[in-house]
Length: 87
Image 1 (cartoon, rainbow, N blue to C red):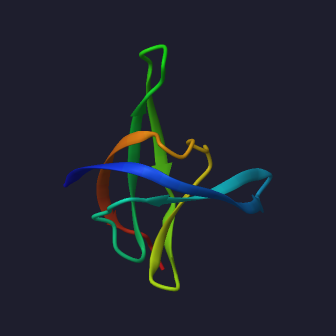
Image 2 (spheres, rainbow, N blue to C red; image 1 turned 180 degrees about the horizontal axis):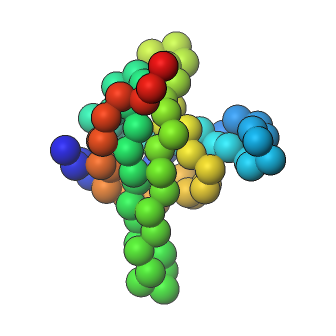
Image 3 (tube, rainbow, N blue to C red; image 1 turned 135 degrees about the horizontal axis):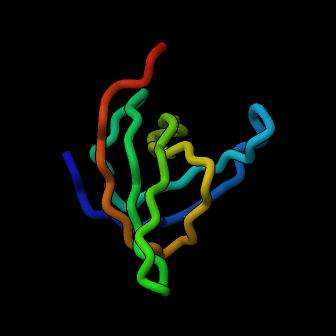
């Protein structure tokens, strides 16, 4: 399943296993709590960027997407939902 969206907000989540992790808020999403997948964007240079979604977090009714590569607010993305993350 794929869907278009725009990054509305970004916040730093912390460092896990030596890697920085971020949370992205999209203007719309087809992800549900626990899903993983990919967000794809196109850089100004035309290079396609694939950002794995490691999980999702419901924060006061907003679904934040956990990623290791930040995308700026205003970035258009295509989301691809793959499956539920292993518990």
